[in-house]
Figure (cartoon, rainbow, N blue to C red):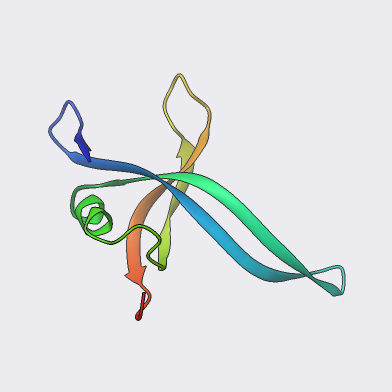
Length: 84
Protein backbone atom coordinates (compact mmCIF):
# COMPACT_ATOMS: atom_id res chain seq x y z
CA UNK A 1 0.00 0.00 0.00
CA UNK A 2 1.19 3.51 -0.73
CA UNK A 3 -0.06 7.01 -0.01
CA UNK A 4 -0.88 9.67 -2.59
CA UNK A 5 0.69 13.14 -2.36
CA UNK A 6 -2.59 14.20 -0.71
CA UNK A 7 -2.07 11.54 1.99
CA UNK A 8 -4.75 9.08 0.82
CA UNK A 9 -4.07 5.35 1.23
CA UNK A 10 -3.95 3.72 -2.23
CA UNK A 11 -3.59 0.10 -3.30
CA UNK A 12 -2.91 -0.95 -6.90
CA UNK A 13 -3.51 -4.61 -7.68
CA UNK A 14 -4.48 -7.04 -10.45
CA UNK A 15 -7.82 -8.77 -10.74
CA UNK A 16 -8.12 -12.22 -12.25
CA UNK A 17 -11.57 -12.98 -13.67
CA UNK A 18 -12.83 -16.42 -14.70
CA UNK A 19 -16.39 -17.24 -15.72
CA UNK A 20 -18.53 -18.94 -18.32
CA UNK A 21 -20.70 -16.71 -20.50
CA UNK A 22 -23.33 -17.30 -23.14
CA UNK A 23 -22.39 -16.13 -26.63
CA UNK A 24 -23.91 -16.90 -30.04
CA UNK A 25 -26.05 -19.70 -28.61
CA UNK A 26 -23.15 -21.45 -26.87
CA UNK A 27 -21.05 -21.25 -23.73
CA UNK A 28 -17.65 -19.60 -23.65
CA UNK A 29 -15.02 -19.72 -20.90
CA UNK A 30 -13.76 -16.23 -20.14
CA UNK A 31 -10.37 -15.47 -18.53
CA UNK A 32 -9.10 -11.92 -18.08
CA UNK A 33 -6.74 -9.82 -15.97
CA UNK A 34 -7.39 -6.19 -15.22
CA UNK A 35 -5.48 -3.63 -13.22
CA UNK A 36 -7.39 -2.05 -10.34
CA UNK A 37 -6.93 0.63 -7.72
CA UNK A 38 -8.67 1.25 -4.41
CA UNK A 39 -8.39 4.16 -1.99
CA UNK A 40 -8.73 4.67 1.76
CA UNK A 41 -11.08 2.17 3.51
CA UNK A 42 -11.42 -0.02 0.40
CA UNK A 43 -7.62 -0.15 0.03
CA UNK A 44 -7.21 -1.21 3.65
CA UNK A 45 -9.93 -3.88 3.37
CA UNK A 46 -8.34 -5.44 0.29
CA UNK A 47 -4.81 -5.22 1.72
CA UNK A 48 -5.97 -7.15 4.79
CA UNK A 49 -7.18 -10.14 2.76
CA UNK A 50 -5.01 -13.09 1.71
CA UNK A 51 -3.78 -13.19 -1.88
CA UNK A 52 -6.32 -14.99 -4.08
CA UNK A 53 -9.35 -14.06 -1.96
CA UNK A 54 -12.60 -14.19 -3.89
CA UNK A 55 -14.58 -10.96 -3.96
CA UNK A 56 -17.07 -9.01 -6.03
CA UNK A 57 -15.97 -5.51 -6.89
CA UNK A 58 -17.88 -2.57 -8.33
CA UNK A 59 -16.56 0.74 -9.53
CA UNK A 60 -15.77 2.55 -12.73
CA UNK A 61 -13.31 2.14 -15.58
CA UNK A 62 -10.86 4.94 -16.27
CA UNK A 63 -7.40 5.53 -17.64
CA UNK A 64 -4.64 4.95 -15.09
CA UNK A 65 -3.48 8.57 -15.36
CA UNK A 66 -3.29 11.50 -17.74
CA UNK A 67 -0.05 10.11 -19.17
CA UNK A 68 -1.08 6.44 -19.26
CA UNK A 69 -4.26 5.44 -21.05
CA UNK A 70 -4.08 1.89 -19.65
CA UNK A 71 -7.56 0.93 -18.45
CA UNK A 72 -8.06 0.34 -14.70
CA UNK A 73 -11.00 -0.45 -12.46
CA UNK A 74 -11.37 2.18 -9.72
CA UNK A 75 -12.99 0.20 -6.89
CA UNK A 76 -15.87 1.89 -5.07
CA UNK A 77 -17.59 -1.13 -3.49
CA UNK A 78 -16.36 -4.51 -2.20
CA UNK A 79 -18.27 -7.67 -1.33
CA UNK A 80 -16.17 -10.52 0.05
CA UNK A 81 -17.32 -14.02 -0.89
CA UNK A 82 -17.72 -16.22 2.20
CA UNK A 83 -15.46 -19.22 2.60
CA UNK A 84 -12.43 -17.79 0.78
